[in-house]
Length: 285
Image (tube, rainbow, N blue to C red; front, side):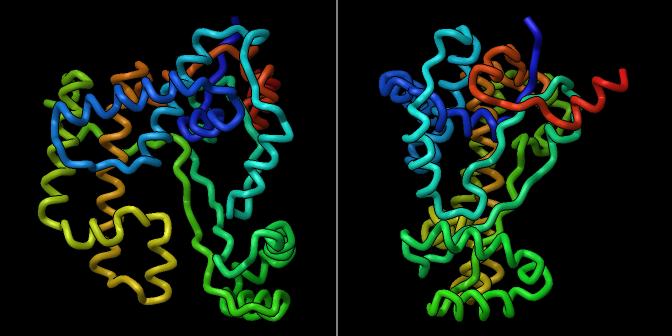
């Protein structure tokens, strides 16, 4: 078996390709909730966050247990319909796998942009084309871009939210020598306690904005949130990411990037392409 690597962000996306039984997804969510409830009764994760984590856990299990011939993929038309409904510019990212665990693309970030709420659903594809055709203007002068877009669509537009996605989900998690030798369960306890302490000291902005963290940049640009509350909610999101990362490690055995390895044949069956950087490195060796 040829080994291939993917990022945690890609593991999450694969959930949209596979025909995942409800029972598996529900079981994974219950396992996540059980771990959290061992540490706190606070509902620190939203329903969508639980679903996203469950998807990574179930996908990891499927990739490790199914053969390329048996893996169940959703109907392609259904996948396309679901992806097109996403209010983001780049909704159909090319899926790639990596031959080398030190490939720089395994830990690089990438950008995406939300589609303004004012754009009706039947105009989403047209707005995507407009954005891509005028991307140079967007980076040069956002105000001029939105004035032009508003005129083109005959709708006053608010700014899109620019989101920088982390591929790996990695952060400098191991902040002390004590944590280096700790079990994953101990690390869950550490990060839950850290998140809860922050939550208790910043309840008001977290309760008000915590479930809309993907809209923070938009809120700040439109002065719907103070800079202080903005920083609080951003830090809350980072602390939750630490908690989620450790829980996923407990339930999947996935640790750092180089443990996210699976069979290359599985990714080929899913329609993945080989990473161009890895391909170049392989040709040089």
